[in-house]
Image (cartoon, rainbow, N blue to C red; front, side, top):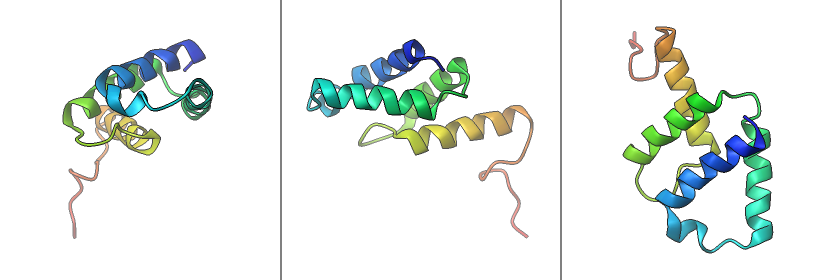
Amino acid sequence: MTRGETLQILSLLRASYPAFYSKFGKQELENIVSLWTEMFEDDDFRIVKYALKDLIATHTGYPPDIAALKNKIKEICSASLNEPTDERREIF
């Protein structure tokens, strides 16, 4: 993802969890943008956005973090390739 796409993702988070993000100052928000840009630089924006919206719809409490979003992306990509996910694995 590009920095601009990262800003779109973080805007979704900020709109969904306004109280959480209201406590950050300008420099802290800039640091968040930089970190998220770096962490998702190899990910497709469309998949990240889809995964985030799914998490927002199902996640309670604090906003989803990088790890939760990465796990959701992995789950979505595995499902699209018909690979077993944690929910679909058989335990022997």
